[in-house]
View 1 (tube, rainbow, N blue to C red):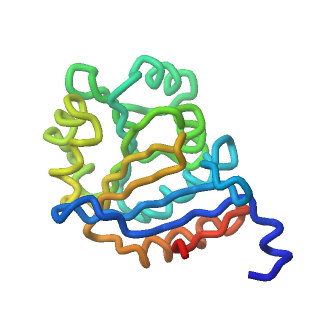
View 2: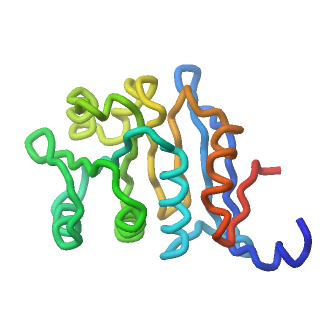
Length: 193
């Protein structure tokens, strides 16, 4: 990249295939500060992650899945007028298709928590089996279900990671979707060297 452009970059998002075993196809996204190589955190990182999740989902239905610290999530959603659905005896909270601004706020507020995201047609009618497993096992529930979705994702934004479990999005497609979505942010999106 030209030196001037590199000087304006604050973050790098590395996108690469992950080896999580023979029965799981996964793509990892890692958002770091350029100089320190530490995980990117804060408001600007939340905006980048929100744009990334929106771009990855595209026109598919999407949702965030929370299965821990539900009182805090519920309170935040009520305070900010964000619609949510309580599932499985209130042990799982689903936030359907959050718009970019509320999505950014949710990511920034709950970046220290691990939560999930899904995109795909099964969200249209609810997916009771996945929701029961989310309430019981957290993101491990995605292992048996990700093939039915465009993706299921593990969001660990405190550590700068988004792990996509998907058989429909290759690394090259993830790059193709994410790059234009974050072009207005000081971030380079690339495969690691």
